[in-house]
Length: 156
Image 1 (cartoon, rainbow, N blue to C red):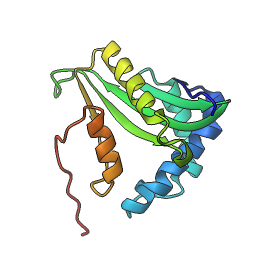
Image 2: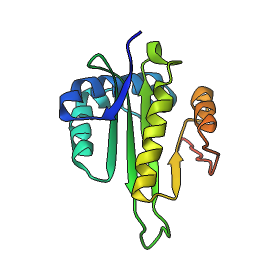
Image 3: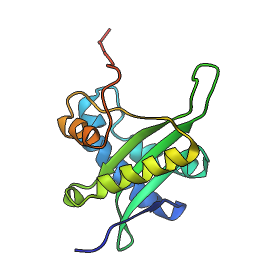
Image 4: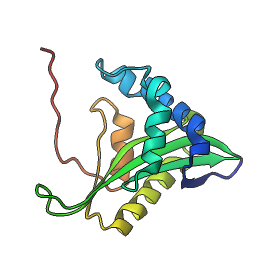
């Protein structure tokens, strides 16, 4: 099996990152949230990712095997503000192709995110997962995340 590298993404990765986002939407948000546009990755993913790559307060990681993107992570850094008394970082989205799960790809992405966040001074790391996504919840708990709040939704 080829080695997986975790690296900061570049614009050369846009096609692979967009495919990774599409995988995430197809498996998670697109099936769990009826208000999500399942075509968003195809319609807007590349432009959004390009903007995130250029944003110094965003981290875009690619998990790479022989030049092919097999997963991604998008993180954000949020400094102290009038509302927030300490800097924090959020793991905004992450996906690993099913055929690469169980090969420590997700763990490598999360660890790289944690290093980046701590180097920037974040004192709290956050991530959200759909309540019905037991696998994601267990994964994040194994990596030191604990429940903080609950989001409720209702149809009008």
